[in-house]
Image 1 (cartoon, rainbow, N blue to C red):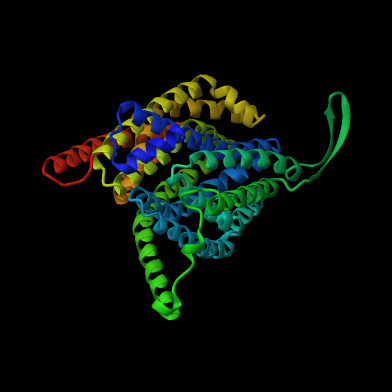
Image 2: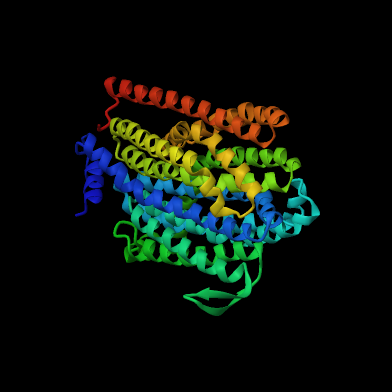
Length: 494
């Protein structure tokens, strides 16, 4: 048995896990999720870089709409989290049949939810760029990019739910590999869809390459095709390849004589309602958190729009470039949710606290390193995204401002993953609400009037640091309370 599976078995069986065991678990589960998150950002980076070759206005059209797309994507992820966390708890408690039922019901409900979001999106996508303050010269391209993204929502929703469930089982290597494939396919599809037919030099010979010439619409269409291919592989592995979660005949067989078809349907509907109720209670605060976070980004975009197309493009590209630094934190946060969730399901709160400290330390170390890298190579990073010198210079200065917040930003992300693993998603939502709207937005509005777009990014850096310190304080308090309850005889395995 592989090292990670052996350690997860020890976790579920109530066996002792020393510091090196916990560190090994965190690293082994984290690195595939870090790769997955980085390749996800690579997809956005490729879209931005290719569209950036089309000029500042084309780039600004994606920059205008991107914050709203992040908002919708966050809601999609939140709904998936409601089932992901339940699966982790079931696996930790060795309720594998219930976990498999959650998979079936969760995927169906996720699809219905995504179709509802798509219906709403198709009603508003034409007006959306103007609501965000965009001018007519970039609004048309922005709406074209948005409509493909909206049509992609069912694919995204089922994909996020599927990958979340695989991660909950500790099988992060498969999701990581699929993410890498999606990134490679996105490069290929974008190459042929964004640009028109052209002659290219290949080893000294001119070759005619056919292209669709769809501009910004080609970028979102390429991503849609790549995500579709990844989804097919993920669903196939979830249902047929994962030993713990793959569907079995006995999951679908019932005794008609003993229970009756009607009573069986009632039992299934009752189970689904219970699962959906719990999923909503878990995911609603996560969705609220995403709305808070991303609506604040929409507000920041509104603050930046008056500074012109160069500022809009620099802001969008800098956020994409910065994602390379904080995606390791998100990857570790996913591992945190899995490990803490399974520990809670197994009734091991003391171990959950120990793992929480370990993942937080790993996340902060990783993002300190990536923050330093971003500060040093900011001009090079921006030059890879856009050939526009003005955007490069402004974007590099924004990245260097943000680099100072990366360690504490890591703390807030990873600790958020810890609390999601416990099923307590309300805390992070409330904390982010206060942090974003009471600190970042007012400070960004104030500083941007005096320092332009750099003022908005300084406000972001300050807010992320404050948020990180608060999350660390809450983690210490949570672990201390768990330890005290165990001493008082809570009766849980350690």
